[in-house]
Length: 346
Ligand code: SAH
Image (cartoon, rainbow, N blue to C red):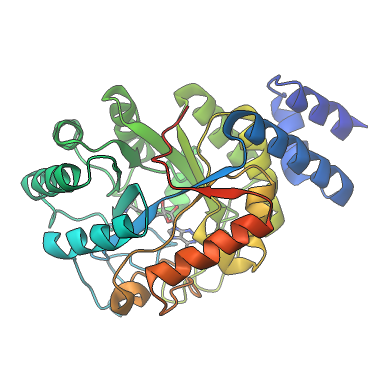
């Protein structure tokens, strides 16, 4: 009964109490889960119709100075063969993506300063000059406000910087003491203030996470109002301290996608690679639950397996064209249509 009441307030666009959110996130009731997803889908369609936006993901570098306990490319993993794409190589990835119709390029990478402000500014300006109708999303970790400002001025449109976990206590269990949640939050606020369409997000079920921690994340997002929200299940990587931990729950991730869609009707929410890694039906389930973005991989085929954030990450040897064809088919099978527009936040 309580669960019904909790869902009612969420469906009526009222913020449920913390206890009610906990109940919804943890519910184990297939019938109600379908209702939750259907309601989220209805809200998504009211705002974005049946469109699914594509973002061409370019994994620019797996060099990282950070040592997040969950991540396969963490600095202390000496078994990673490190690479950083040169600007020319990044331009080539954009060209492939542009010719396939993509109008957003996401430059994601480990946190390192091989990409100085100067190099990035030049690269962003070059991409923007050549592909004027395309958007640039950066996902390069924490940088100074001055650096973000330069990247924005050069023409970058969006920035993804997941908070990872809003609970400081949990943050300190997932990261070494050299990393601080407060610093990360300052970066997120800077990005927002500088006018980036800003993405936040978290993993579902990393070690030590409680559902209460997830409620903290949702509340932080309600305060900051990100335009994009990326969440995915934790997936262990064998060469990290969490290598033997259990993978996150697909169903819980899907419920959270729906909850986030209902609380953020206009957000751009991807069905993420980690969701697809844990479940063949992950993309379908994510879309049906309110997700409206997919990020096909444009990284050079021969380097893709080196950007291994977690075990089993889908890094097929197939070319971007084929990946996109497959995505178009899957999206249509789920009852939606791929849109090749830039797909800015409403
Ligand atoms: N260096 C950038 C990009 C990080 S990679 C940054 O700091 O923002 C993108 C996302 O992958 C991370 O934000 C993290 O949430 C996710 N990720 C990393 N390791 C993971 C794992 N083992 N399982 C699931 N997701 C993971």
